[in-house]
Length: 522
Image (tube, rainbow, N blue to C red; front, side, top):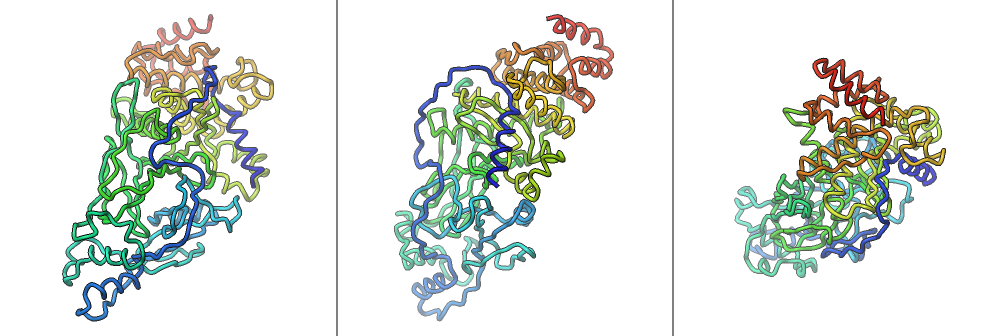
């Protein structure tokens, strides 16, 4: 399996956009708080205060005159072992929130991911979850019930019996040897709180903090797990109350559907772990001096969130990328690509499908649609622009189709084999697919930059396909939505693009022909 992943990863890198030749300096960026990377290191298994047995014992200790409490499980702590993409998606479709590590172990070293050492590296690892006690387990997917749990909620129904369930939780923490996890203020009779806060990212070119938009904030203490999504300003409030210190994770699976699943192949979306913090919440400012991976993930997240919002514009809509588009981020590479592998580009070709055999579906689960090489991106603006460039390609893919995209990728691969740079010189077969694709992507990148920062950017203006012709058309009234309409499957050269635009907008035919002619003469 590793051989297949390695070969296909190389294809992603070869089929890449050349971002230019900036100095290859590696920036040593400071770590932020509890953020750490690599595989989670587990310690001993802890006694879970939320098991039915432990909660019953806590009730009996606090209310000895009430007789033996008979608690019934509210939740099941389980783990699943999906074999493939379909099984994973079936579970997710049932609302199962899965994490790749157990919730009832001491964490010796935080990290981005965990893989069970008893399972082969090339398989999906155990996925841990807390589900309702009446959950109907889907047929055919392997699972194990680890514990039956009682997780009381702070509402009228749990107060009617005269039992203070927050006090019971605290007592259960003490009786199971976990008293050190309780908040100092809650070791007495203080009420539990709903964690809330704000996560922001510094856009240094704008000179202002912007919210981390639409990301999942997941928290837990043992099996008491909850999550929410940040709003457009980065604010969040967790829908459950906690009395203990809790573990916070930023999970880069966005409310708009896209995911950033970077270094670790078997994780559908990356997570930046913030460690254990007070139940009141975490408020955090992320900037270019913060942990490098957290910073770049956050900027790419915001770029994609904004891009999807732009596609939904009432005045200048675009076809949005597929909702579940997946990014990989590479910190030490300078080239980016949009191979759209998860959505069938290249992988559905007969030769590649035969090469992968039964692994084809698993590869689709793992591999990216967009890879971002961020070696030369040192600030918010450069990461943001790079992401928007590749997202423009993803919109083009969705409109033009996989057949078009395979021609496009094929041209880039031929350039590589011929010893040319990513775009070549336009002389090889199918160069027109690259010509149209890069004209569009550089145009949109430059347009987004100008709209956001109020200044010209002119990225890609030195290339043979001359994307600036589209900026000039935009300046004369043909906006992004109008230009995008012309990017149909048959438009596979600059000449055909000019013809299509002239046919769509006959009132602007003379202008279109004039501008394209000017750049054809260069």
